[in-house]
Image (cartoon, rainbow, N blue to C red; front, side):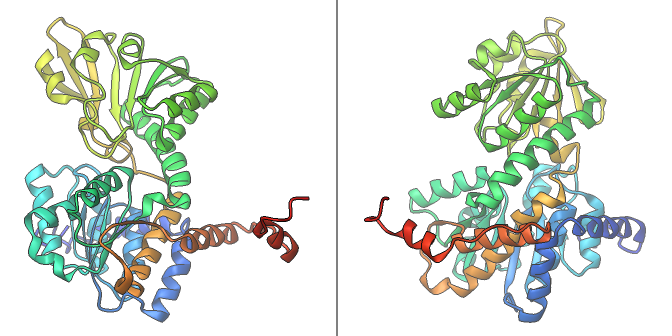
Length: 420
């Protein structure tokens, strides 16, 4: 949110954002430790960074860490409904240019991405790969400046690996989503809790006894399914991958095709990263009053144009709840315009889990700068030493100690001859 978009003389919004950023920071001890080191060492000194992320209190703490490290960073939103306006205003007050407004239309969204690219970044950080793909298609002249980038989420990593496979990726990217300290916690516990939070805030739904159809059983699906089950819902999983489907069965969930699940579901949640997971024939089969929400990155998992083609009327009946009246009189409900419901209707992941994700982001940016001469134009996983460092810092912040291998144990593990 630049000064053109928001009158920063009115300090009430920015002040509220600052207080919420500080509150989140209390639950982000790893980022705080990194920030203190960055202040002393300045590993990002003079580096221009363009970040396309959800503008939340947790992201703001990452932004402050980058600034402490000497980065010249600008931020824009990675989803039109994920911005917290008070946080955007506060970031401007902290001296970090931020172009983001909750509810911005598609034209404004991409205008803000282009503004971030005007910064001529040397490092990019993305959540969904819109910044990277826009640079590669519309601002190719900027690529020569770029050292490398980081990517936060599953959907973005899929896009970037597709680019690399087609030899279209022109600089190295570290897939932060590949870190165990990211996907095992952010995806599973963060998405699981925040998705339930977003749906609950939007609807005031009682989960107990509801039939919840969960489309997709990756790590995010794991987390949401676990929490829905814990709230008393009957969870049905739909999947296209045999191993994940089998895992869902072993975890105690029913598994069936979406065509069958569409007939019985009360609440449908998509978390796949693909498109048209819930399609025209599924809307037609649903019960009157069925609720649909998406927690995948883009608003394509629920085929909204198909839903509109079946409808004779659409109206907003409460914030983030749109009622579609089908031509046969049946009513279906879509939450958050089919966008990330955990950020559209709630606040996204808790700070304590984003602490690890954003610690990976900050440390991977430092790694890119230090190792730029030897990195190729491809997608890299987070270096193992960074992953382990983040886990160790998190454990230490929680006051938890663990054992270490003795030299004898390490020698045994390293030996292929000694088996007794």
